[in-house]
Image (cartoon, rainbow, N blue to C red; front, side, top):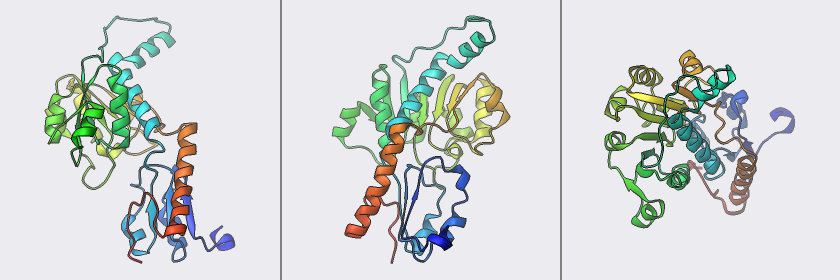
Length: 287
């Protein structure tokens, strides 16, 4: 296509992009003509940002397009793990109605610890407040007092503090060198006994072996996962365990999120060719 239709000045990557990986094999054919690549999704861990910068190619993500939809998924998983919905559904489908009655937990009054208070984390905080959950957050920078009041959120200066005070932990930070395996054995040990954890960010942020160990020991009661380390090849444990609620990385896959993502992508391209700078750049090319 590039040989027949090229050169390409701008390149748009939509959501649901797994079939097109690895992107580097595509990108190397775009240079040196391509000037900007825009993604309709928020995450950009698939992309070699350093290489794009060296080639003088802008990379942009969609900051807000999937944020509300992903926050909805996070809240769904929180309710699912706290109320133990998947076990109940399986029991009904197997013809056992409720089966052995094991009371679930009530989210009201629980402390929700949000790791990453960006757009998704903020949307989640607003939604969780409707369930009378107390919000704490850990972020690379503390929000100003006005924003903290808006989301009724209390800042934790360290990850350990957040984990030790939270009944439910939601992972909402981007994947990078600093956040890979951010939650591992030491971090699970710091959490409350019987806590819950959900991840709608990236699978590699949680050490999956450490998570399984924490689930089996009872340190973590249940986990809700929309993302995994080796998608779509899930660890067999996650497929079969009643202690895990799973979704197929579908947090941002809604009709409105797709529309918003495409709009943000093209607005970035339009702004770049009009002003020389896109709206939501990930990098800052030298040339």
